[in-house]
Length: 76
Length: 499
Image (cartoon, rainbow over all chains, first blue to last red):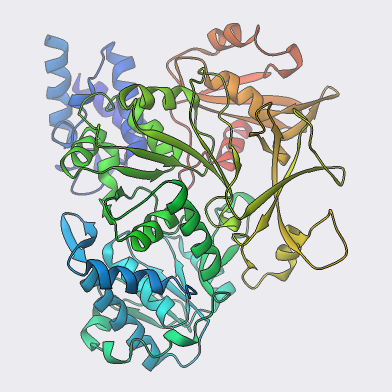
């Protein structure tokens, strides 16, 4: 899952050197367009629906937080 | 007599001195603080720049300080030019070449722009100089035909053009909008558009004129719209002047029904076509708010017409751009004659005080678009030729039909690409769409984003559009490229097709 998510993030236009950054938010890596991209890609690739309430900075702070968000959604 | 926008600041300072004029990242700047900061800037300029009516570039993020810089420059009888802090160096060089600015003001420190002959000073340096005692020196010299600001249009035509707008045009728009929308001091606006984009003009001046409050948040919040909805709800934001793309983003990122945003009462938008589908999503959660579709180019000071949405619209029905605003006039012209009949398309020409002065240091382009009224030749009268197509509906409302240059001739038919976009955009799963005509191959290419395959769209539109209007090629994009004004970037789309 982690590899797939890394791939998706790269595809959505995040630079290689930024993918493993600890804080996407503070470093201004995600803008609204990239978010739209990432959300629709994740939903499509994992066959899930991400609720608007889950689209918050805490869940998209770095690769780890995105992985655990996806795991949580998958479990539900 | 109201002849400068500085009068708005002085009135609100007199009446609402301790009220928050601007709230930036949760810090309030009162009208008194804004007035003082403005005088400091004007005072510094009065002492350091002997000339007047010269462009001064402001390269600052959207903030309370940036607004004080604009007002200080205006009070010194000079012209403010907001630029994106991330302007690519080549574009910046071109713009500085056009403007030959007296100064560049930036935020924190006096860093060199590496552009020879362009002096730079920081907001902090100016404030520290504390020259407010001479800030009002030039106030009485300002006349309302003096230029107030220059905004550079996005690069859809190649070289940037600097649109020059006078105090009078801004006053005219602000007075009209404030009356029509019944703005008063209780208005709480939330800024969305960057200040280098004219969609931000009402934020600044409708706030100042009415002693209202303007909230400015960092751009990051638009990536997480639930946070934005929280912000709206906590701060009791009641009025928005946003671009349609931002409203669409909030709807598409599923944030609309997540919070109680019933404090929102007035939602105004301008700058591009608002897709009816996402508008309907907004109206559903805010049934008691008024929604207003403004129309107008930057060259006519934000807007020249508007339509207050007063009935239901189907997802594939275009929104009217309404009727000319008070003290403005719109003419639809085709083959040199004014169109009065319903349904006949013509180019939009704009008359009135809101029509700008022209393009800075570019008489050639100015004379192409700011022209003598083609309907009379007995006295001089400059009107603005928009390059936009429109027609009247049965209620006398104007319906926008797209750019004149989107009107194409394909297999002998005259086609509006906007019409195809409307139809594709109405498909439920389509998020955004734009059509481009490839002249060399005589081919209509439709780009879209959304969770639906090309064939499914073809199926859905084939019984809505005549056969000659069906795109030869559909290209599904992850997301549509946007230019720095937040509009769909058609030049980039063209490149996609060529690859």
